[in-house]
Structure formats: structure tokens, C-alpha cells
Image 1 (cartoon, rainbow, N blue to C red):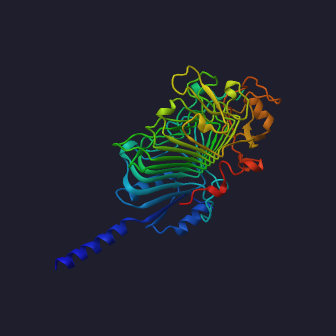
Image 2: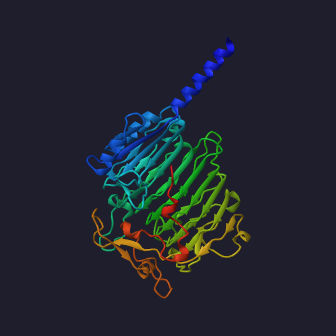
Image 3: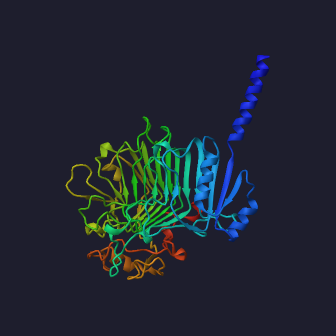
Length: 442
């Protein structure tokens, strides 16, 4: 009798566990659009839903994910203004998965963020990040943010004569704010981070275990002030196992201030060994980042295990008057140095640094960049135009003959020209950085 009872209990438990773990799709598309009509035809009100606004999609996702092991996917087509996320302590699903996925074409049969972009629109008074999560009382087993265009320009101010960013009156708020959300797997992929007045985001989550992984992959970081800081928290004795920064295009980014004594200059800000057990930087394209590709201020003995594999570097130290293509792999004080040291890429970097270096190259990727017309700085509707490479060199303090000149302006507003996204024009550079073939697959 006892055996029968145990068997029945086990069967009931298995059925309950299976029922709790479902894949749920939430389609979000503006009302009366082709995407709305296609989504409504697929929604069954049980495991698939349609909503006209992202805020309603987030609310439903929280309801369906709370205290479950569900895989909930917010699937977005089109564009929308607003700020989205969860409040402090707003979600508890340590074995669940939340995927926030943009880039769906209107028939929902294809997800291609670079063909069917999903733009989250900013406004003048943006008070928070586009996507934000409510601190270390918000637990999500897997969190994915993929396929969005986040342009901060409408919440910035620019000098009308030079098109230079005015930092004092621009919104210095990240574009994504993790706020120490507790997760075991973080994925930020296939996004375009554009015109940020201070950071696209900080990799600032709390690890759910010592096996926690962060994958930052296939993103464009364009014309943003110090775009990324690797800064996960320690949490209940846990440390993030690995941060993978792979196949990103880090182009035309700026220091905190446009002078060589500024405290934050490099595009990627490296942190010490409390951040993670290992940092892997692989397959990325770093070009025209005036203050350096990566900032390294801590002594090498305090750093985590690090690998730098198959990255392309080109002209990343012009803030310091150094126009060499190979300069600026690292900039930083490396401990007690009174000023930034400029590190160039050379063979056998491992002789000088206790990290793994392999197959990194120096090459002009010939990326096209679209800048807005001067004088249109405060307009939300501007026409972008492709800028020739010599103009970019001049803007970054490099003249056409290879010498240095003064930087002409600071973080000028950049437009998004979907026909000319900065994929490399140089054939040998095409394996580096963002690629349509590398888009995250749920």
C-alpha cells in the first residue's frame, strides 16, 4: 500500500512539475499593424498572448513567470517609446527564464534585428534606463535582452555649432540598468547602443551561483561614453564564473571627458578579480575609440584570469596624440602610475602580461559611420549621412597624412543608417565584430 502511495505521489509530482514549466510567448506589436494581425491569429490566451504595448507585455511576463520554472518570451516587432522592467523585489523565478527579444519581422517568421530593427525611443526627460531590473531581490534564472536599438540622442543636448555632446545637460543614465538582478545566466546580444552620454550598461548583476555566466555578444557599441564596465557583484559568497565579451563591434566611443587626464577613458572598463573568475574577450572589433579599447587601472596581480583571442584593433589612442593603428589595446594606470600608460598590440603580449593572447590583429576595418548634420543637434528627426574615412580620422585628431591634430568635437551626434550599419568594408575584417549570422537563437 505504501509503495502504491509513493508511486502515485511521484506521478502527481512529475505531472505538476511538467505543468509548471512551459514555454510562453508574448507577442507585442502596435495595434492595427500587420504584426498585430499576425500575432493575434497565433495567440491562444494560454501559452501565447498578444499585447499592443511593451508595458502590458512585461506585466503579463511577470505574472506568468512568478514562482515558476517557465520560459517566458516577450517578442517585439516595431518601435515604441517608454521605460520597461521590474521594480525592486518584483520577480522571483530562480529556475525560470525571461527573454526580451526584439527584431521580429511583421509576420513573426523571422527574427533579424539588423533587417527588422526594434527601436525603443527616448525622450528629452528620460528618467531611467530603457530596460531596468529591480536589484538583488529580483531573481531570474536566465535573463536575455536581445535585438533592440537604443538611441539616447533625444535625451542628450548638443552644441549647435560643433555638434559636440554637452555632458552637463545630457541624461547621464545607462541604457540598460541591471541593478544587481540575481541571475545564473545573463545574455545581452544583438543590440545597437547609440549616443549614450554615459555607458550603455554595467555588467552589474549578482551571481546566483559560482557557475553564473554573462554573455555579452554581437552588439554594436557606437558613439557612447565609456560604454561598458565589467562590474558584477559578489553575492552570498558567489562570484560570476565567466564573462564572455564576444563578437561585438566597439566603434567611435569616447572617454568621460575629452582630455588625456580624465579618470575614465577606455571603452571597456576592466575590473579586478572580485568581478569574475574569468573574462574572455574574443572576436571583437575595436576601432576609433579615442581613449583606448580597454581601460586597465588595477595591478595585474589583482585581475581575474583573462583571455584576448582573435580581436581586431585599429587606432584606439588618439586622445593621447598617438595615431598608431596598434596603439590603445589597453590604456590605464596599472596601479600607482600617475598617468595613463598606452599599450600597443605586439607579438608575444604574454611576455609582459599574465593573460592569454592569441590571434589578435591590427587592421583598418573600413567601417562606414553616419553622422547627423551640424546644427540639427536638438532635433529628433535628423538625416544621417555616411561619413568618409578621412573625415573620421580628422574628427579623432588624426590628419590625412597620419599625424595628429586637435580633436575637433566631442561625441557628436551619430545617426542610425540601417542601410549603412558599420559592418567592415574590408574583406579581411569581416570575421570580426557583429554579424547577422551570429544573432542569438532562443
